[in-house]
Amino acid sequence: MLMFGNGTVLTFDQNSTVIEDGGVVIEGEEIIEVGKTAKLKEKYPQAEFKNVKGKVIMPGMINTHMHLYSTFARGMDLKADTPPQDFVDILEKLWWRLDQILNEKDIYYSALFALLDGIKKGTTTIFDHHASYGQIDGSLDIIADAVKETGLRANLSYEVSDRHGVEEAEKALDENERFIKKLARKDPYLGGTIGLHASFTLGDKILGKVASLSEQLQTPVHIHTAEGWADVADSQQKGFTGVVDRLNKYNIWRKDSLAIHGVHLQEGELDILKRNQINLIHNPESNMGNAVGTAPIKEALAQKLTVGLGTDGYTTDMFESINVANLLQSHEQSHPSVGGEEAFQMAFINNQKIAQNYFSPQLGVLEPGAAADLIVVDYQSPTPIKTDNAFGHILMGVNGGLVDSTIVGGRILMENREVKVLDDERIYWKCQEQARDFWQRF
Image 1: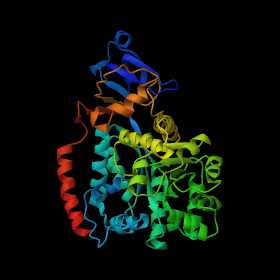
Image 2: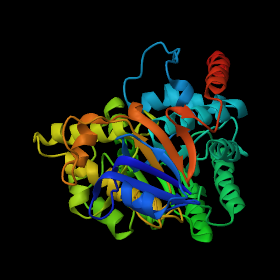
Image 3: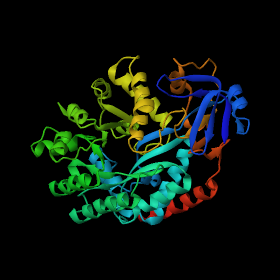
């Protein structure tokens, strides 16, 4: 039994309760009580006590869209005559070249580094979207091995696409099927979803097969949706209103599926997503970096759509994504009071809801019966932290670099900024070595 106490507890329960001089008691893999430190110590004298010395105790962060395989792109020379001029150019000159070169070691160390960085930034659950057309078969197992080594929770999918030919697309779909069937049961730490690239790289034949497999496995999909205008133009040329409309006609929208980005949704498509109970995942930094536009987040939330928040591989730091989501909405709406409420709902209400539909324990909240996934943040506030202002403190004062300790399922993965589950220095050295090898092959 473990007790983390003498901290400010941000529960992110239904009332966003904040407990000053509070603590969390863990037994096995779940939380058994949250309350004032003094009372908890009196009630559980046998618990091993971890004194956080005034730091913030809060739920681990949930990232609902990530690309672990993107790690080695950081700082890489594209070796192109001209830099990318638009979104499709970025795909062709960087990501579609990169995914053809990845080998087993690249996949493993890319994932391991990003997962390790997630531990250091306070992310405890990740929904990953993978592509490695040079190494399809067994690639999700390689990532799963890395996930198990770190102790994090992850939902994995392989990106099906016709861009390398129909045969490769079918192999990619087979990889999703193989991995999902291998899991066989609802694992509290590892899950699988059918991954798809985007409508404009998916032909009619493969979409039909995806719909059939999704129905057979009773498994939702994880797909980039109307991220760039090229995706919409392709659907409209085929006679559809837009991307969501096309995918709806092919019965792709199974309940709880993840529609990523949604920047260029057309009239009536938010309603289609809502009717099918689809999750729209916002990735603000990616949308800004790729210059594709801004998703209609305010409108989507107003229509009661479940809108989550991810990073799209731009960072492992969900606090960074929260901050940018807030600023982007304020900027786009030309209103200083817009953004905060939307960012809060995406990160601390909807991401929690989405994760609950994929994992068996309750995630994203500190309350009895929930998973013991929590982080300790070394945030020294100049002003009081209360229920009505806790999110404001996160926006203005917290970043992933302040994370002191990370716990998943009651297991301490990092404590006092020291990673406990892996030799991070050795992994960093191996990643550097592997990245150099990868860059030579790019």
